[in-house]
Length: 189
Length: 189
Image (cartoon, rainbow over the protein chains, first blue to last red):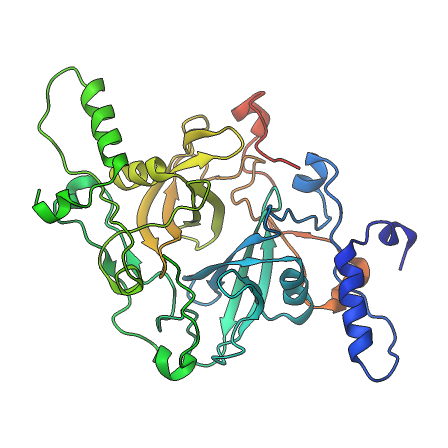
């Protein structure tokens, strides 16, 4: 690894390295890990080649996850540094569960793993877009639908005399009770 | 308007009504406005027909905006209550600009107005997905690209020996200096 990379390796790099090396039984040859570069200028962040994500004051970055084949938006989630690193290194989507306050390997319970085909970052590097294909039923929503966005709100006030959401998925893809049992529902009022 | 609706009209309804009626020269017949219902139960929020968005502690809800024809994610923005109401009522995307701290009618400066074809809300109603067609050049990114997500990060650590972002748009769609002049750059370090 070059000196220039060494100078920009953040704390979480050491955390992940330590985690890997202390859980393996045999000493292993070092493998490269994701590097987050420090954010030094607008030009670097917007027009450079360095991954320099901006985490918010909760340590999170928002992530839009899209079904790669249909183009449908499956969900909006949040990643902390570790979730983003694991997503890049494993090719499977990881998030930070805000309701459970844990690292969340999507599909670990349901089997509906999200395999990442592309990971984009936006201009100011405070948002992620994943294009994924989903294992199993292809669902990503804990309520049982394929997408979390299974309802739409009609546009323009022609529709507002009888305002109501319109369902865009006719039926659930799976039975959430059977898959999740009595796991805490992540929805909060 | 029914009694049941009257009981659930939030403060911002009165704000918008007042704004409209005090800026018009002639008294006008009342038109229906967007209603945000109070969040009363998980079942109502997840499986009901009532629009009951959850704004965060900054008063904002995240919004994913997608090009309706290509499926590309153009941007991730944030809406306050007024921006969401105006988006629904006008069919043109409005956001809350976190850098400028103002209501932001997207395209007001650049001409690249986002015309909303569909507005979805997610299971727990804390995220919006817009499918839009964009006026003019079709661009939505202040840096000049069509999408804010013009770079991707290669997946898996096979690529990490020489980690760098990969551009997915070959050139800018417009010259941001010509369109925005010396307007404040919204990117913050």
